[in-house]
Structure formats: C-alpha cells, structure tokens
Image 1 (tube, rainbow, N blue to C red):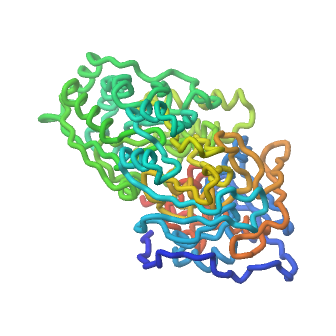
Image 2: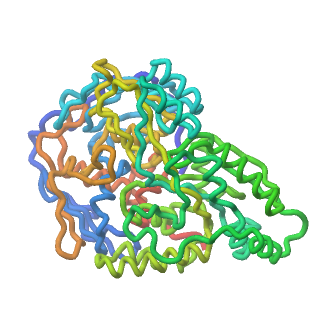
Image 3: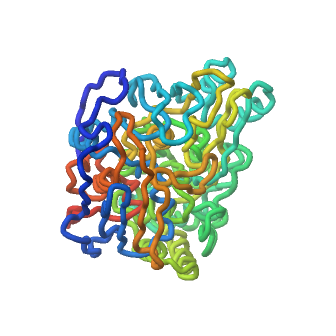
Length: 552
C-alpha cells in the first residue's frame, strides 16, 4: 500500500476531542467481528471472532489453543485505541502523527521524523499511578558517541545502547549509572533465497560453516554477549532444543563453496541500517568484520551498503535485499513464537524469500499445541529444519542496556524496548530527557514495530496486559484479568472501569474490538497504517482475515 504524504504541524497540543469524548450516556451496544459469526478458520489465522459482550467484557474465540496469548496481547502493536479516533484518523493514515492513548503520558509537542524531538506531558486523568516527572522529552542521535557526550555533559538524563568500548567509561564515572538488560535478542546475518548465489543450499551451508561467529562477538560485542547456538535465546522455554548451529570449519566451508561452480569470482553486498539496535551494538563495525572475513577466508568480495533505517526495514520486509544483511531481533514477548513465528512463519515478512514447509509446518504445530511435550517436539523439528535450510546465520545474543545520570531513581532497562518513564524520578527535576538512536517511525505501533517507536508507544498507549518494568513478565493493564477456557481456545478479558483516553473518551469493549479488527482484517478501512504490512500481527496471529490470494 502507498503511504500518503501529509504535512503535519510539528506542534501537537492535547488531542482534539473525538465524538466519544466524555462519559457516555448512550446505552452500550454489543458487537462482534465478524458480525455474521466466527470466521472460517480455513483462512489460516489464529482468531475466529472477537466479541464485545458488554461495556467491560471482550471475548476472543481462537481457531486453536494459544498458550502465549497473554504475552501477545501485551505487545505495543496491540495497544487499545479509541474507536472514534480510529475512525477519524485511520482512513487517511494520520494515526502515524496523531496520538490519543490511555497511558501515563500524552503527546504535547512534536511528531515522529522529520521533527527533532517529541515532548510528552503527564496525563493527570490516568487511571493508575501518576507519572513522577511532569514532562518527558525524547531526542535522538544516530551517533553513540554523541549520545554519551550528551549524557556526560548533563543535557540528557538517559541514553540507549552505549557502545561496547564506552561501557568501562560509564562504569568508571560516579555521576553515571549503567543499567544492563537481559540479552533476549538475537543478531543474525540474513539472506534471501530468491537471489543468487543464496538460492543454492550448498552455498548457504558453506556460509554457515565459514563465518567465524565467535570472532565477530570478540571484536564487536559488549561483555555479557554470547554465541547463538539457536535462533532463540536459551532463557526462553523450548528455544534450544534440537541440534545446535554448525561449528566454525573453514576447510569444510571452502570445499562446499566450490561445489556450485559459479563462473568468475563471487561478489555480494552487505546491507545494514545506520542505527544501533538492542542486540546490534555497532552495525558498521560488524559489517566491516564480516566483509574482511568473507574476503580473506572465503574469497568472497562484498561491498558495504548502509541504508537509512526506515528504508532498510521496508526493503527487508518486501524481500528486496539482494545480498547479505545484518539485523537484530529483540524479544517482543517471552515465548519462542516471538522469535520463530515472526521470521519463519509470517506471510507478511518476505525477508528470506521462500520459507520451506519443513520449517513452517512444525512452527504452526508448536504454536497451536497446549501440551508441553508436543510443543517441544514441534520446536525440535523446526530448529533442525532452520539449521538444515539456513535462511540466516545466528551470530550473537548481545548484551545491551541503558545509561543514566546517577541521580535518576527507578531507571530500569527493558529487554523489550519498553522503558517506563512514568516510574522514574529524574533527581527531583520536573523534566526527564531521554536520547535514543533514531526517531520513532510512528505513533501507530500497530504498523511500526521498530524499538524506538515501541518505547514511545509504551508510554502513551496501553494494552490489555503489559510487561512489568525491566522484565518479560506479563501483568494486567487495561484488563483486570483475561482468563481462558480449559482448552485455551476462548479468552475472556474483563476491562477496568473508569479508564479514559487523553481526549476524555471513556474506554469500552468496542474500542478493543476495533483496535484488533483494524489489524486483523485486510479489507478494514483502517488497515492502511504506515506501511500496510502489519508484520507484528502476522507474526503473532498469522494470516489476515480477507487477505488477497497470492499471485500465481
């Protein structure tokens, strides 16, 4: 889908009033999606129907059991929007720059790029504990050195992803604190099997054995990083079952790379985005290390092709990167499906080209199994198939974190890019200033899953469940409780009463229904978003309802 170009004023005051603002005197009308009854589960997705049973009750009927349901609904892309706000700003794609949440902070000034910063003001009508700091200012600089200098000078209170060689400096400075986060991330080298020479399985096996992954970690990653034996970090259940990744074997790799018999010298590209990620400490250093290894050890010449982050991610999802690429994946939620399904069982993600059924079929079985023994067997098969097919090469589970002024109380690094600014006291100051590596892409995180957008969205919007600060543990948020039936195929969520959006509209079950339907239904008038791909949803709940048939 084409993103409409709109010129938006850089200054956004409190949200303008939507038609539903204020306490409703209109009797609540229950609703269902789809209206005519549950969807035919043959469409391939997880959800069959969503029902707004009464004002404060929502029911999700699933096509199969989902033991990770609570973690999925805690993700930023599943934040609850006001239904009238969605109707007003969704069809013209202005949700990217118009924010109206229920969270502890509301947008008072600025938008995602091309502005230079975003200011959040405390929402005094918040249903929970009010934010400590009256204001939060988000700034961004791509240079890790510039972020550290801003922190040292005192112009900002916290920064994300300091460089590995800056960690000793931070730890040795009594005016600063380093907050490490659990390494629930994976940095990998990807490739698409629709482009030569990566269309050769033998060639991919050669790369899998011929790249010295430990050398990359030693030269480019901070302390606390570890070699990735599987795609998913072993701290997550069922992650490290099946055979571990290939050991480094340069001689075997050279022999394999000679087999396909490509004419002339081998050349390729190394693509990467020009920003630091939660598990990607310095992309340019890693790219240069990979380039050197390919040339010196495997006689493969590769040029470096950095791209602006939004461009890179769009090209990646569309499957347009015709060389090797570097990317990290940070745990969206603490379940193996968060890593494997998004990448290898997600029709909206074309980054690897064609995914073999030997991978996708067991992933679907694992996603639908409530029995732990059956889940483990499915992930043994999936992990072994990923190892056999080599759609990517896992490199590291990278140590990362945040750095803060020493007087900031309550600063905690999130393993999920969900730092909660509301619980932080910036040394008694009324304003907390945070500097991250890049601008958020959008206020509408249903269609923007980059870490910088997710962090912002977690402070403006809320989901039915949330992650406890600094952890991957879920806890009720807009829902007081979501409880399943015995088969884990029907989940009933009971909403908090008295929750209001920033414009004064009162939360009810139809807001939940519409927030989900806009992502779920490909033909929904609001299913435009920023890119129209909604890759978060596709990785969590499978194919869209009413999705067009793939081209023959």
